[in-house]
Amino acid sequence: MADSTVKELFEDISSYSHAVIAYVGEDGYPMNVAADFKPNPAKGTIELSRPAVPVEPVEGAEVNVTFSHIRPYPGVGYDQRRYVSVWGKLTKANGSLEVTPERTHGWDEERMHFFELCERSVPSAHRYMQKLSEERGEPVKTKMSLGWLIFLTTRVPFLTATFVPILLGAMVARNDGFSAWWLFLLCLLGGSAIHLGLNVANDVSDATSGADFANANPTMFSGGSRMIQYGLVGLKTMKMVSLACYAVGIGIGLYLTATRGTELLWIGVAGVFLSIFYTAPPFKLVHRGMGEIAVALGFGPIMVLGTYFVIAQRLTFEAFYASLPVAIFIMLVLYVNQVPDRPADEKAGKKTIVVRLPKNAIVKGYAASVIAAFALIVVGAVTGIMPIWTLLALGTIPLALKVHKALTSHYESPYELMDGMGKNIMLHLFSGLALVLGYLIAVIF
Amino acid sequence: MFKSCNQPFRTQLAATTILDRMGVLPKEVEELLNAALVAELTVINRKGQPVTYPLIPLYDGQFIYMTSSVLFAKKLEHMKANPRVSVTITDPIGAAVEPFRRATIQGDARIIEDDLHSGWEGHVGDLWIAKEPIVKDLIKKRFAMPLFWERSVIEITPKRGLLWPGGRTDQPPQQFSTEQAA
Image 1 (cartoon, rainbow over the protein chains, first blue to last red):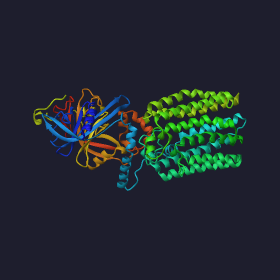
Image 2 (cartoon, rainbow over the protein chains, first blue to last red; image 1 turned 120 degrees about the vertical axis):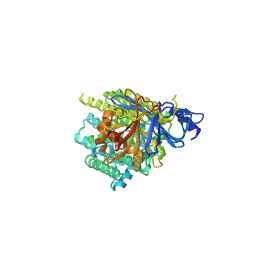
Image 3 (cartoon, rainbow over the protein chains, first blue to last red; image 1 turned 135 degrees about the horizontal axis):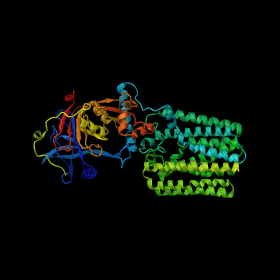
Image 4 (cartoon, rainbow over the protein chains, first blue to last red; image 1 turned 180 degrees about the vertical axis):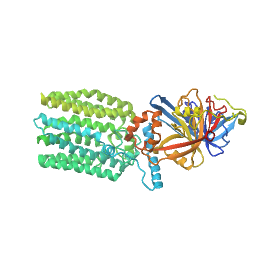
């Protein structure tokens, strides 16, 4: 081992209370036993106390010395897991044992999160299950109930991004004197189908490009559904699910176009275009740093105006204006969720804005966008473009501040950033619902 | 930092004693196994080299159990090729027993994996939850880490072992054997 590696090793093991030396006995059984230890930097060896055992390790034998640590949590389990394992040749001197390190292996959950350790081990799991399949002559696969498979593959919780603008569009129409709950429900169903189709298509694209396979730090908000990577759903099935979702969404859109007005066609075509070419060639918008614009347009003006038109059969500047803060907040959900994905995205050639720009610019960009969104709400409420009660959305400013702080502090730590990502999604959801509530109060009073 | 042993080993080795038994292992060893949150499992790889893994030991009075996710299956492959293993419990923090003691148990491992998805729950689920209660909540959320919960069971039949009643491994241990208990 290189001197620098040995030096690092000695620093690593200095925090452990004892060692466990393991060797193979004459009878072919391994023996392992605790021993006190002392690194000898001058000789580059680890000295171990000589344990009292029936059969000692033989001089010159390859032994394994392991150091491990946990911190118990009574009634729960334990944390602070770490271990270092060293292999080397054994010598005996002055009544003690000495091991010259030749290779080392270990894990410290404070340096590599357990989730990341698991993600990096996924190919190993597949190899093992493939071996079992060959031994048994039948496939050995990861299992999950159908309900969870559907829920996770399509990423149903992300539908808040669709629910908010469609509900807002319906509320703006209601405020203008137009309502039809069944049309609202059709818009919701069609918009949701397109969104779920997009989610699955995104997974297909990221699997094909290698972005998701290269991502060792996925979170519940980023890195895709992982269904393909975990072997739960095949690529072909994902493509079919995506196509089916798009078929449902487009079918509903065509019905609404036929029954409510052909102006809807252009809104719908724009929405489907942005959705499909978000990842599909030749445009691959997200790969070109235009994902945020696509998401803002699609989950902002297109959904709000589309719903408004379906119910009111007209388009207004006020409906368009109401969509703008929601568009910015949903854009920021994608923006922040892409932060942990940037190493894997960059490797796969997916040049999102977050990949292109340094941390400083991204954090400032977040702040500027949030300020713009809240400014739009204030201007809209004060000028009468939106009901004054939409100022209720300013109640979500503390959430924005928390997200900004999380971005600043945890930009390089995906798992620490997860709480911030969650709050950012809540910011979009609650600010959108507050706008809806503002319109509802205006309708009632 | 440690004491050296100057006398030849064989003159120090205490006579084998037959210790109090509850299951197949001496009571002091069973207490240690039941208390330990971590043990070191040493297996032998295809090159004949020892490889040690820290794992949580579970014990039902007859076998020592451990479980391994398919994510970390290398040890399973080693044991399938060579079932001879050694388990030692050494950590005073990870195994809170009074008085502190250490033990090493040698035996033969069998890998049980006919049902990776839920077979392990039937074999060792209760034992695991009793030792690490948070596992019960984590199992409910297994959809979040599906591969981690596809697991094999390592069933170790103890053959013989060593007990250091005071935890000092530089002192002669008491030896025990399951053949003696039979």
